[in-house]
Image: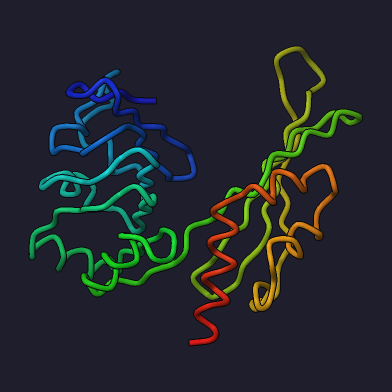
Length: 218
């Protein structure tokens, strides 16, 4: 975890998978990638995906120049502006940077304007606490560039020693047309009843199913 030296509300969460999440509020400025604790020179090069989380409203001029190496930019629905230059646009097209976000948001508009590919962002579906095992699962609907989708389960359970955790990951593949004619009620019916309330209250999932089906109708 890193903290911006210029804005105490801007926090970077780094993952070994190459994902870097930035959390905060308002506009991200050119100076915000200067962080503490000291991360080393060009620390951003370790990450290929930059995810801008909800609460952030825009990326100011000069901010993305720090992340020229990324191959994927994920913009939450609160992002309403991203400042770029013709040179940066050219580099992003050359590097085939993938833009991800929800349908009908700035992310999709940005991708179209810049001539970049767009893919709907993954949707966190629910957290499943199975007390009798015990186990805590994080369940995500994932979309892939080849048009496929799957349900990803990231499972955590107590390990054999104090303070350690076991678990693992597994995937349930979905047909490419899984959403066709599917309501949120029908989708929730594929999961245990204990998750129904979470799924029915998942507004991102509800928006996706409604818009994906609307687009099928042209």
